[in-house]
Image 1 (tube, rainbow, N blue to C red):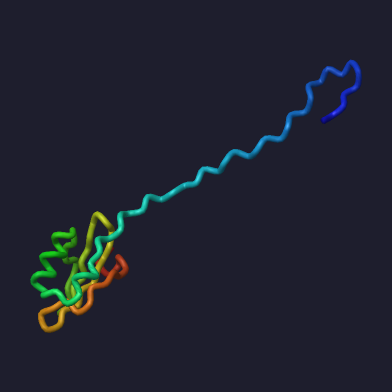
Image 2 (image 1 turned 90 degrees about the horizontal axis):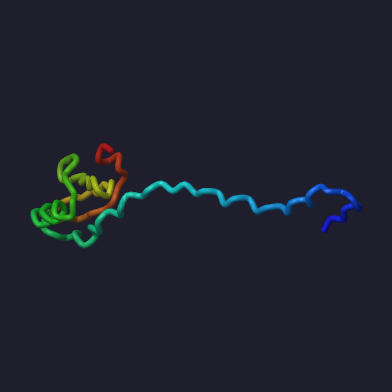
Length: 99
């Protein structure tokens, strides 16, 4: 508390105020890609139908490797087929799907 002299009419000093909370900018995150791990070992024809049902579309294909893009989730998944079945189904970089 500050002391003031008699007759001093200056207002008392203001107490320091807390700095305003900084606004935290958040970047909206796309929804997570639908889980596709359960498609490993699925028949390729069934797997393709299921990928489409989950919102994926083939972005590109190279031999038995397909890259599937899910536009709403902004996610790319790679499938590798061997002997008519999905041997691997795994998320990859969006650039693999051309995004």
